[in-house]
Image 1 (cartoon, rainbow, N blue to C red):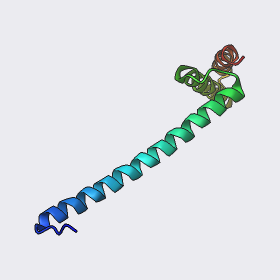
Image 2: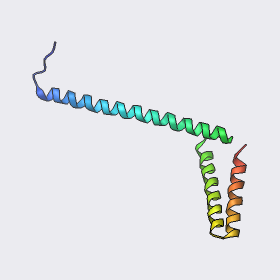
Image 3: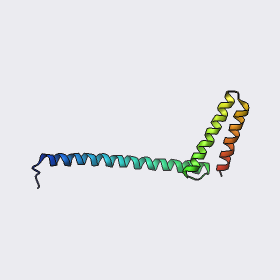
Image 4: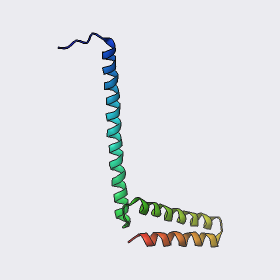
Length: 98
């Protein structure tokens, strides 16, 4: 059995072990989040019938935002603006969804 005579070597090993433990825990956490997010995107895109690329998902979000703008304009009694936003959003979503 090897006995270290220098207390700073022991302190360095303890600190290195602590840092290694933190890095391994963060790596595990980020791998878990990455798997969950990719599974969510794959399920979302499969349910809508669109590709699972980032650009397709961004266009789906943009289409939903345009529909939101249309409904908020209709609530504020701006009929022409609301109809235009709704038609643009529906057109974008209908062109994406297979």
